[in-house]
Image (cartoon, each protein chain N blue to C red):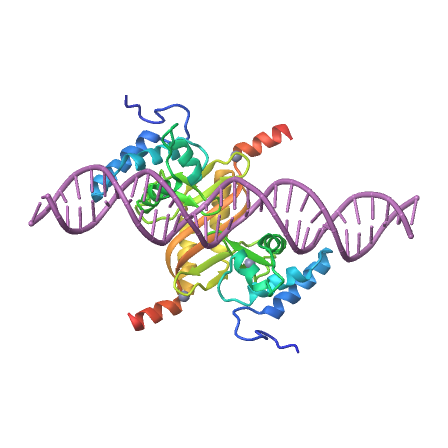
Length: 163
Length: 163
DNA sequence: TACCGTCCCGTTACACTGTAACAGGCGGGG
DNA sequence: CCCCGCCTGTTACAGTGTAACGGGACGGTA
Ligand SMILES: [Zn+2]
Ligand SMILES: [Zn+2]
Ligand SMILES: [Zn+2]
Ligand SMILES: [Zn+2]
């Protein structure tokens, strides 16, 4: 029942690992990891592409048991505030976070226009450049958004083979 | 009739300079700088804070002569495609561009949560870090979004004096 | 002149995104 | 028991963005 990684079918993220991390984090902070919040996280983790709030609501709904988008938004607020998912400003969509960000490093998102895959990474050099720019401007940052749209390596190869 | 900078009332941008640059650019590229496009650019340049498409439509409308938001979106598409305005993904709002970006440097936006002011700048170090991260990931970029929300220097001082 | 294609813009309709406000359930602490 | 905080369901609504159609202006061409 406990495989090390990618336990359930072909999904792009370590669903069980993400849920385990969320449970531990909520226990530590005295927060409630409710069924709605867990299922929301699971739905996001079960896709390789970022999902919109209404897509998530649809996947959470059962025949006769609809989940309203507003409930999804509240669950997403909780998950983003606690660093379990990220919101992509350029897509109005959400992806799970598989980083710790314990050192305060901000995320860099590489979003493929062709296949929709999102790669989250960090860069000390970008971080340093941002900090220097902010210090020079006397600007106190609260949140940072770095999102690059383009083509991932796999899609470039596929395009080269087909085109 | 030709002041060097900030010619018309108290606006945050060099409105006449932006319009002149747009006219020259359209002449060079064989594009039409229509009245709607010019007035849209002027409205954006006449504010220190970023404006949403519907705000722009309202400011362009006269009693009995309404400008629909969809027309504003088309004008904004034209202006953004030609590098005359930028869209802030985190705000769904638009600001004029007072940089050339001729070397392909991407913009870094510092957005103040308190006063709403937006400072556009560039950074060779951030650029370098982004390029290195992209090369390492084998990712071909098409557009780059770097937006920092926080407090500008003036608002920090004001807060310190008041608080 | 008439014909044609392109671009711009007005209009309508619609889908998607996000929030405010109110009500009920549930659990812990008096 | 009541009170209170939190979560969730429900409704309503505002804001954002695009698709589709039609008409007018304008330049080229026969
Ligand atoms: Zn992350
Ligand atoms: Zn791809
Ligand atoms: Zn710019
Ligand atoms: Zn400010």
